[in-house]
Image 1 (cartoon, rainbow, N blue to C red):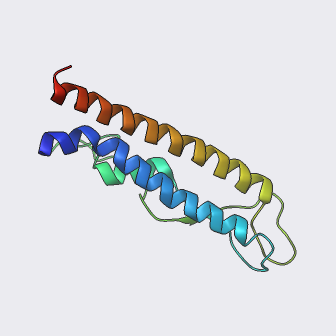
Image 2 (image 1 turned 120 degrees about the horizontal axis):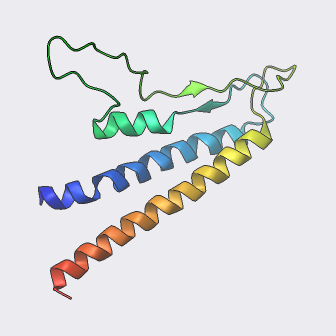
Length: 127
């Protein structure tokens, strides 16, 4: 069962993180006209690496230099291109573009996950 989970883990994790990011971007779009709202987003790659436990470099010997890695996970505030006078940092063009890209990548992750499951089902059936 563990091998089955490991086979699907990356795609399933990516799908869940894409869903979280989509919710955050939708919240930004919904609050585009609310004064003082700060647009938030996450670094998807850093979150995925934190979830699956991989990073760019690791030390394996006491004499190796540790490479500092960026803080993974949390949501950050987007820096506005054109700040508004009411303190709202949501820019609809940016948010819509990010939302559309995230939706496309969500669909891609879902397709990869479905294909993995189909491949496993074919192997189980012996076809």
